[in-house]
Amino acid sequence: MADEWATVLLLGLVVLAGSSVQRLAGVGFALVAGPALVLLLGPGEGVTLSNCAAGLISAVGLADSWRQVRLARMLPLIGAAACTVPAGAWVAGRVSGPVLLIGIGLLVSAAALLVIRGLRVSALRGRRGAVAAGAASGFMNSAAGVGGPAVSLYAVNTGWSAREFVPNAQFYGVTVNLFSLAAKGVPHLAAPAWWVVAAALGLGAAVGRALARRVPERGARRVVLGLALAGGLVTLGKGLREL
Image (cartoon, rainbow, N blue to C red):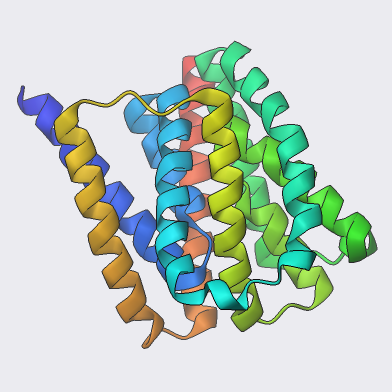
């Protein structure tokens, strides 16, 4: 019983950290919290809970900024993601636990490194770039819970400012995570765990909003990516040990 409550408490702390980061930066819940959720709950439930929580915290942020969403520019991203989410769900449902851990660890680590380097690729510009980024993001979000980096790279290559990016990323987060949950279903957690997750999401939203007024954008970005890289490497190591 004590072990169960310890896991629930850790779950709440992870969701609190991820939701604070997401509310602060517009993306980052899955990068920061996803690897830890996978380690706590296993690849299947961990990724699904990451989809659920990331979608909810994106919706909270979107409530304040929905008027700034550029729907015409988001439609190619969303349409492409809708096409590849089922493939990601299919892969996640058929790959063994250790292999999925390795895949998640590799994807998170590689995505964090690419965003840190600010990769510039001409193919990630314009409508074709939006379709490519959306397709990659939809697959990665459904399979591993990390759809944000592909969209971040698209935003970097198209010259979006942070002010433009955050509301559009939140809108995208709501939609792509709804697609992922529709393909896989909701996570199966006990009632106390759901209550802790809900409280952590609410508190994280408040913390992230407060931090957004005080933390410089560049500093917040470095923290998010550093945590993501560390979590990805730990998940990769666990998968390799269990293989």
